[in-house]
Amino acid sequence: MLNLDDAHAAAREAGTGWRLPTLDELGSLVVPDCTPAALDARIFPDVTDLGDGIPYWSDTATSIAEPLKMHYYLDFSDGSVDIHTTGFPLAVRLVRDGVSP
Image (cartoon, rainbow, N blue to C red; front, top):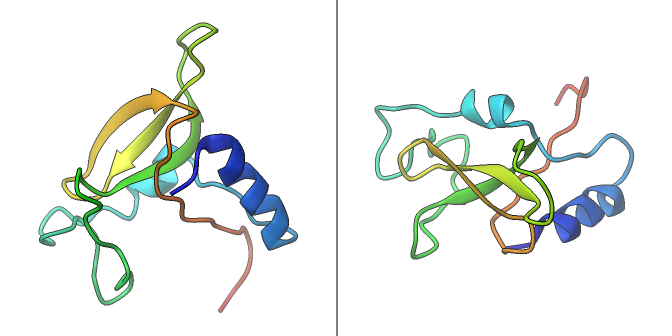
């Protein structure tokens, strides 16, 4: 659970190429028929409800003007999208481009 600034810092600390996913990238992981989370538990076995859903930060900002600094997040408990202030701690899943397992 990190606020958005700390999530960006964690991505930098993780090394070259690591970053927060966009909202579209997070949305591509949603599997509507999976329960209790809208993710395939075989691929993401460590995703659990944090007491108020399964919210993960995206790196997609809203168009809401300063001083609120709102960003989108995706709740993997049901695949819904919402916004929150960047200082609020949410879960983080980092991604990298062009890296094969």
